[in-house]
Image (tube, rainbow, N blue to C red; front, side, top):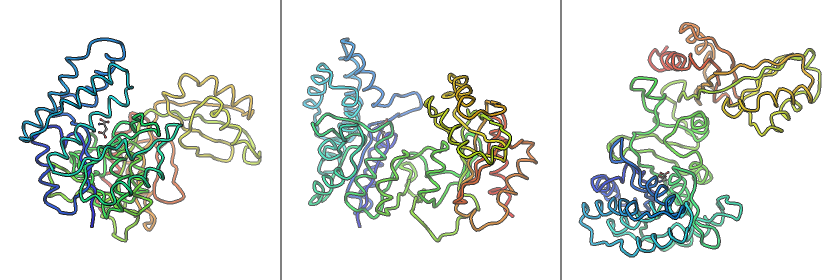
Length: 439
Ligand code: ASP
């Protein structure tokens, strides 16, 4: 059994946090492949090392002096090294970083040093081998992550390795130029490593005990999710539930490797299991609720729309021509509604309206802004009757007017559109009816 363990920035923000991570790793002999993030915040008003690096590099790029800023970064690592009582010097590394900053090695290179240095510290602390991610995580010329070549290289590199630390967040182009994933990308690296070594589980250690059924900023102490499928997670992440980087599920998903989200500060908690499929009955009909504010609906009316072939395509073409992606398209006999992100749409609304008129010749177009979309997700909904009914009666009781409903054909989720101002009360009503008041 092999486990890949990824630790997030807050889990490695100080020597004290490093020790917790070390204890977790040493408590299980299978935890042999470690993927660290850069040191995160030690307190709410602290700055992440990644952000310090971006800021420091911005000075270098403008040709300004950056010694003080680089020294502050160095101090963060020194504090950890001293706190762990390691005989490790990062002199050489910092000299090289300073030189590369002066030569304008790029902001991706700069940001990646956070993970790189933390990887060196972690490897020294654990006595594991350090494997630079730039050697094995490859990006193609278009900047896209090359999953197959990476998998081949990484597998080969780690084949005869007993235990290794592989820094998260970055890789390199074929010519060695460093490139990072998007922010929070160490989660992806953990997943890539898990796939390459065919791990039995990918443990992702963070500062919360997994996913919660709903956002704790809206629901007071919501319950945690024990098990969630990759598909359910996709739906919830897309609608704003964060914890894990969205792209982190793809590499492990192909191999059927489960992800276990765990809390470094509460290692006794089981956290959330993210799995391909499970026969375990979910505790509630719904697995989770997530949502986002800031949508617009564009309502298009045309008599006899139902019999006009190609009408939908023409309408969507108007959005495409203006570079706007759509979220949902519920339709009726003579109406079709397109949901879009308000901030994207706002500046182009009149161009889109005239394009719809030009292309589809509708009778009437009406736009409504300040809408929110809420996704109610759950594999349990498929086998349960009356889920939609319960949602709507709960919303009616809470005086929430439902503007749109869209149930995916997989019966895995129901999307509801409400006014931005009803967003919180709608989520509360749905949470209460399924979790607090169980029938
Ligand atoms: N350190 C990077 C960030 O702050 C990547 C990560 O933590 O996953 O986004």
